[in-house]
Length: 550
Image 1 (spheres, helix red, strand yellow):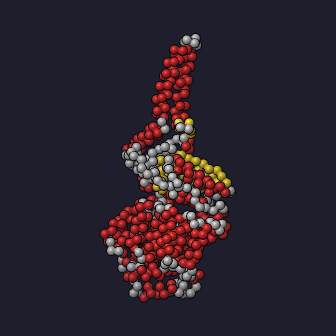
Image 2: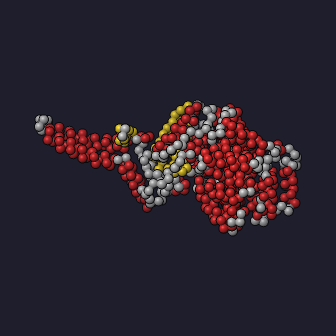
C-alpha cells in the first residue's frame, strides 16, 4: 500500500511538472485574468448598447466553455518566435523529466540527469506468428541507431530482451536496468506489408508519453527504422548534435531478411548456430554484394570457427579475405573495421589489428564491441595489461555487462594484481547475479560466475554454478570447454577429462588456447588427456582424418 501511494505521489508530481513545462498553469492564470477583464468590460458596455440582459449571461457561459479549450491548446501547442506551433510529436507527456532513478527513488522531481532507455523485444503480431527473428532485428536496429546518439544511454540487448515483449512491468524494468524510459513495440508483417507500432513509457509514472504507428511496404523498412529512431530521439528531447541515425544498410529487403535470420543465430554462442548464421550471411551477400555489414558478420563467423578449433585450417585465411571485402564495400562504418581487427588478430598481425580497432573507435568512441573485441585481441597477443585497460573501458560503456569485468579479473590475476582481480571478481559476480535475476537461463553467466566464485574462495558455490550452467546448456561447446578447465583447476580430474572429450568431440578445441590454459595444465600429465589431444589433432574423435566428421 505504501508503495502504491508513493507511485501515485510520483505520478502526481510528474503530472504537475508536465503542466508547468507546457505552461498550462500559466495559461490558466492568464485566461482567468483576461476573462475577468472581458466580463468587466461587458458589464459596462452591454447596458450602454441596450443589449438584452441575457447577453451578459451568454458571455459568462462562452468564457466558461472556452477555458478547457484554452488548456488543451496550451498542452498540445506552444508559442515560439515563429508563431504558434504544434508540440513535437503531438503527444501529451513528451516533456516528462527523464532521469536514471528507478521507481523506488524519492527523487523523481530532482535534477534531470543523462536520459536512458531500454528497448524491449518487439511482439510478433503477424498472422502466422513466424516473424520472431524479424521483430528482434527491427528492435536491434533501432537500439543500434539509438546507441550512436550522444547523451543517450541504451540498455544492452542481453538485459532488455530478457523481459520479452508482453506484460512487462515497466517499474521493475526501470529499477533493474536503471533506465528512465522503456520502448515497447510490435510488428505485423503480411506479404510485403508491415505495420510497426512503438510506444515510450516513463518508468517513474508508468504512463505512455509517446506512440507512433508506421504502415508501409516492406521495401521501405530502412526508411521506417530511421524515422522511428529519429522520432524517439525527438520525443525524449535528446540533442543528436552531428550524429546521423542512418546506418549503412542494403537496399534489398530480401538480403536484409537473410541478414536478420543470420543474426538471430549469431547471438547463440555455440558452433552449430554460428554455422547456421554463416549460411544466411552468405545468402545475404550473394543477393547484395555491397552489403558491408553482412560481409563483416560473415568474416566474424570464421573467426569464431578458428577460436573454437579449426580442423580445416582455412578459417583464419577466410576471415581475412572476407573482412577485406567488408572494408572495401563499407569502409565508413565501425563494424567492418572491428571485423578486420579481430581477423588480423587471429592471424597474429597485432600491429595491423590495433590500427583497425583505433579506426573503429575514432568513428564510434563509445562502441562497446570495439573496446571489448580489442581487449580480446590484446589477450591473444599476451598484452594482458592493455587487455585489462580495454575491458575496463568496455565495462564503463556497458555498465550491466559482466563478461568484460570478469575477463578483466583474469587479466589482473595474470599480471600479479591479486587484490585487483578479487575486486573485479566481486564486481563481475554482482553484475552476473543481476543478469541471472532477469534470466536464470543465461548459462554463460552461471559459467563465468563459477570462476569468479572460485577466485573468491567459495568453492562449493562455484561448483553449484558450474553444474547449473552445464545442466541448462549441455550442448554449448564453449561452456563445455570452460567446464573442463574449471574442474581441472579444482582437482576433479575425471570430470575435467570428460568435458574435454565432449568439447573435442564437438570440434571446440583450440590447441593454442590449450597450451596457455593454466587450468588444463593440471591434467596435462594424464594419458587420457594426451589421447584426446592426439585424436583431435588428426581431425575428429571417431578416429578418422576427415574434418567433415566434426
